[in-house]
Image (cartoon, rainbow, N blue to C red; front, side):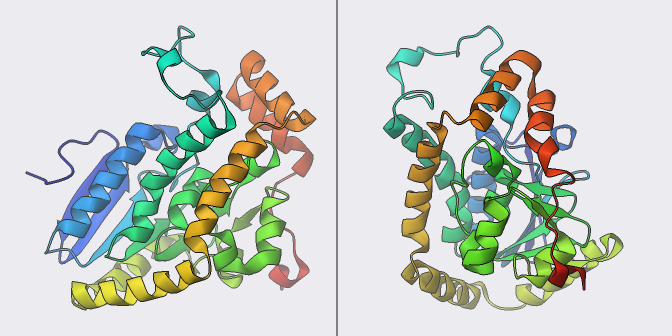
Length: 299
């Protein structure tokens, strides 16, 4: 019996040759995240961190995508009968005060921060879409290897809020972080590798081999030594303000949710009247293909 992961509906877990493999398993929803899935992911990561036969973890998504983001249909559409399955007046809601919103965002953030806090290294294996909340997970991992044609970005920054898990600046620096967040444009995997957002980008047919080889090489090092390496580098990030920035990012996201600007208001109206697909189309249409265009990246 697993110590932490007692049951799982949305995450697959296996161990072989000192490597744990954790798979987000909602391929029909492009592995879009919701609280139950994130809780299962946290439990699987804790299981891998606790097992003495595991030295390194591979995190991936089932199907065509790593993770297309948070489940916006659930976040914006509410409940089928219009009411939650509990007495909403007794609990904080994201539609309450700014502090209520911060509190709820912090609970989700804690589920992602386990990737940063756990002792063992995690490799994110990214194919297809790694968008919005998907990057909240991937950028907390220790390594990201993706396909050359993978799509990474935070298009929700165009109307819905700012990333509540903010690791962008630590990977790409201030100008690229602003470039990506202030447009919501996405990067192809090959371009993400050029600016340091990911460790490497490879042809799709080579992704399995590239990730497996890195995991194999890391797995030969004792877990205690891997932990020392990871924790000293992450301590350096903390000295640069990484942990404080996570708290600040949540508060800024909650503040952004109060915006009555036309784009956010229109998204919410489109969602209520026409559904998620129409809301996303109207949000993103002015941006064309939504990809970063750079002379330097095209070389």
